[in-house]
Length: 252
Image (cartoon, rainbow, N blue to C red; front, top):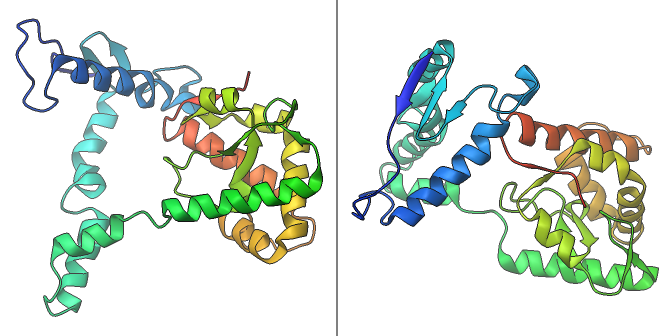
């Protein structure tokens, strides 16, 4: 086991050279320890903190993981990373008319703008008007006022496809925020999810099927798309929770 130690407290009141003030440092530490460190590895070990054993102001990882990070770290976030290498290639291919910074800024730019989000939400509200009553996708309650919630949060997966937008109670949407719906919750709410997907399929069939196939179905092109799409949605959410370390949400 390899142990790392770096104090995050600032009892003297001095400002951190990285985070600025002690409050910011404390929030960063709390977010790291309560989300990715807690959930990463739960599939392998069947418990929280399966890979990163957390203790106040210290954390440890198995020696094998430490060695792997040593060898592969530069490919994940260093100068050998795929994005950085692609930027270098693009600069050379342009005859050095582009800079590495320009290419990286373009590659990292969000593919979906705020305007795209508003347009999709307006379209969804118009469709729901023709359906009459609206039920919260996460609770089943009939609601007159509702938010349009991203099943997989937009901050995590820059996806504004119609299938990823569902009506939800405002309070539940605020509870969920950047959490990932658990596969169990998706199982429980499958009937409502498919109800809204069918509505979208009726009103915007070409766009809906194209987006669904790109994001969830892949090469699955049969007319019976509902269950394969739900299954892949559960797989995607499970991956984000157990592998990527995002917090699961089980509804109310």
